[in-house]
Image (tube, rainbow, N blue to C red; front, side, top):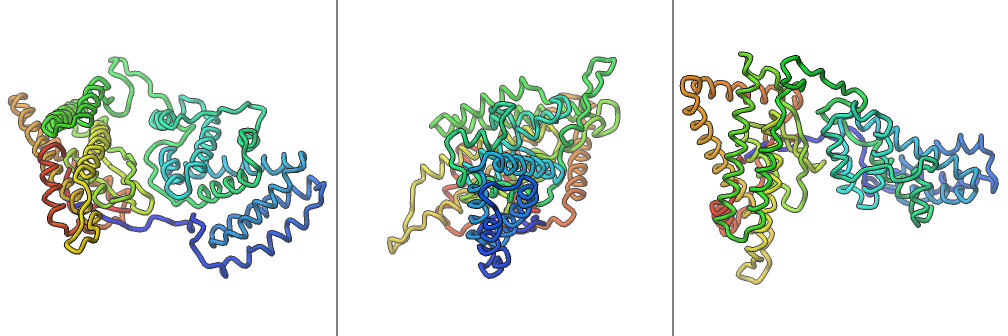
Length: 467
């Protein structure tokens, strides 16, 4: 199924443990303690202003080399300096500026708020994740709302991202007043700064903040968007169906609700394609977009298979960036909405099904729960894909029949859109390669997964495209 993985990271490691102690000796405790020793009890502002960037650089280099002791020494040095009000102002101002500047550069390297939030939690932790959200809120406050992509604003809403501190405060002072000691706060700050400045380059999927220009409404009143808007009424109905599928304990009901949601989304996708081509050229007024969707451990391989299956059934392509914990789905806007909604719901249903299946042991009493679940989820994804493809094919046939003579144009139109998606993927991911994903060898798990998919869900593929 699907396509697999090429390394995407053009920066050095962001985790402390990556690298040997000896490699970090040049930036080790001796260097940091020396810098601390240079600081008088009442530091000269000009001298300190020159020393702070040097210390920050030493801390980042120490983290590059996995030298946690040296990085801790830098945090200790900063914490000691922050005991003096004049010196504290210099430190917190410099670190705050460094954080926001690094965030601006992250946007330019293709990252979006949801991407940074997801990756920070994956690599660091929830405390650093919360600090990163505040940094992003502060950086994005620089731009007028109308000049920020609506998808970014939606991500901020989901993260409850806002500048909650007073304009007269710095970000770090505000966190300090919430009860954090300086050492903890500055250690956390260095970790987040290190992550931000070492983020690899990604594909630029949306306009950068500050560059969005509101479209002028055409005279016909059809709206000025570059592509047909996704009908929120249909999405609301789809969400209701999927919520029912997730909440019911009866597999037959879940199957009915999930299949109904896919049929509704398929019909909406067909209508959007016909609308986009209404001026006579396939894909006119519409173009493939990209969306990153998180794929977390455990069992990230089968989860990627499921996302790939849902994407393929909805005429999208998925490229998996395993090290970064997400898949990039490329397709037309209406199809991307379908993929994200359906994948999220199916993942909930699959997790419930595999958990309900319980644990397993072999004949010697040893646990084989992991291979059982790996096989279960892989088979689930494979079978779901088959069923989704069937629902989509039935909707295409029904739409073609309903359009009478015009229906003959529908299949070539949809084929053209699929080819356009493939061209965009080749352009964005020129070095992507296919690799078979391990599906597991537990026969009971495989058959149980297919049976669960037959009772209630949808997905496809055996290779995953990965960056």
